[in-house]
Image (cartoon, rainbow, N blue to C red; front, side, top):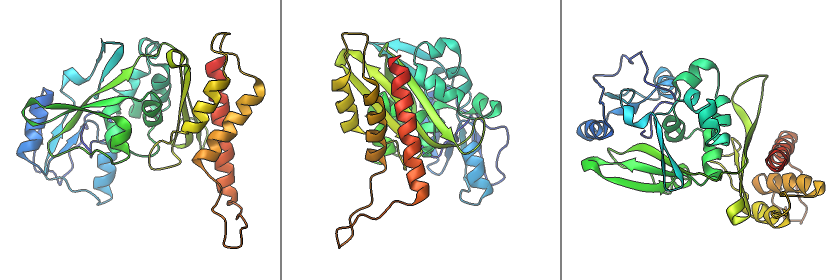
Length: 306
C-alpha cells in the first residue's frame, strides 16, 4: 500500500479527475505500474482517497487498484511471526480465527467503523493513510510490527512500522507496503478506545497493551492524541518490574491506577514552567483527555492481567 492509498478496499467509483485505472494481479505488477506512471496513486478502497478528491486536496492523474492482488489478502506463519497481507480487510481481521492469532488487532479491526467501512478498509490502507485516529496503528506500535516494502525490480526491504509513521523512513517512488510482520506473543492483548459519540466512531483516544512474558515486559501504545502512536517506555518498564510473572502475573491494585496516571502524564505532560517558576494549568479539555488516557491504560492492563 502506498502513502496515499485509501483506507478501504478497491473503490467502485473512479474519480473523474483520473485519466487511467490499472488493475494489477500481483504485487510486482502494481509496483511496475507505479514506477511507469510516477503520478499514479495506489488505491485499495478509496475512503480517504475520495475524501481528498472531493475536498480538492488531490487530483490523481492515474489510479493503480490493489483489490485484485490475492497474495496480500491473507496471512501465513513464519518463524514465530504472522505475515499479514496489506490487503487484509478489517472485517476479515475481526473474525474469530484471526482474533485467536492477534487479539488486539482483531479488536481494533472490529472497532474500525460501521460494516461498510470494515468490509472495505484494509490493514495497509490504515498504515499508509497514517491518520492519527487509525485504530490499527497503536496495536502495531505496541506489537513492534515491521513492514515489508515491495519495490521496483522485485526488491524487498523491511522497516519498523513506527519508523514509517514517524517519518523516519518514508516510502520511495514506486514502493508499496506488501506485508506486515507481527510477532506472535501467545499472551493477553487488549485494545480499548474512547469515542466522542455512542457506538463505533472516530477515536478521541485509544490504548493498545500487550504482555510479553518471555521478556517479562509490558508494551503499551496510545493512539489518536498525537500525529503518531506514543509509547510510554518508562511506564512500561516500571510496571513490568512490579508484575509477579511467576505468580499468575499478580499486581497490587494500587499499581494499576498508578500505571494509568504514569502513561497519561508521559503522553500528555504538564505545561512548561513559566519564567516566574509557576506551572500553568492545562486547559480543561486537555485535562479531560489525560484522564481518559489514564482510564484506558488502567483498564487495558487490568484486563490483560485478569
